[in-house]
Image 1 (cartoon, rainbow, N blue to C red):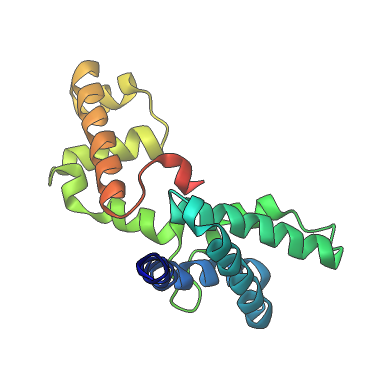
Image 2: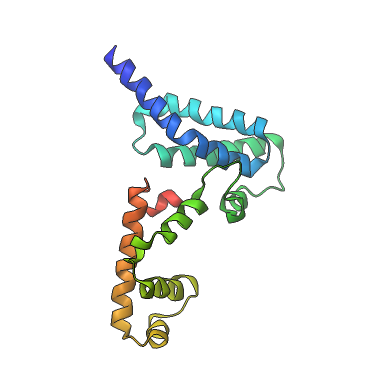
Amino acid sequence: MFRKDTRKAKFIEVYSDYYPVIFGSVCTRINSIDDAEDITQEIFVRFFRKMDEVENPRKWLFGTMKLVLFEFYRSRKEDATDIDLLMNDVSLSFVNGMRDLRMLLDEVFEDAEVFNNDEKNRIIFDLVAVQKYTLEEAAKELGMSRDQVKYRYSLINRSILQTLKKRGVSNLEELI
């Protein structure tokens, strides 16, 4: 009896935490609420069956989502649709109030603590990660040494990873 209750509680918790995210992600990729409901239901039915074997529900759900979407398109014989392009389309980041990967990353990058409340750190990140400056170019631009920029950039990366971890992403593979 105890095992059944804890299993049910685990499913309810995972369902409550991830249904909106999974449904929103599916809906943005297929643009049909009815089909998205069916696909999301299938994902959670599969999760319920395998729940005892799943170590990381978020990673498992998103992996299964990709598989079920592939099966959906294959069953419709819409060969013109490239599922990988749909999965990576950052313009589909917010639909019907659903949070998605892009929103999560935006929140992390807007968090002042990620940059240790130092605008110079934010500039270093922007130059190196976004604008593709080399460490030397960023150092020259900011009047710093290459080693100073390298050190600060490594601290920023560590801070980003820690912030993602606090938000439920334990490794970068989960973002893919």
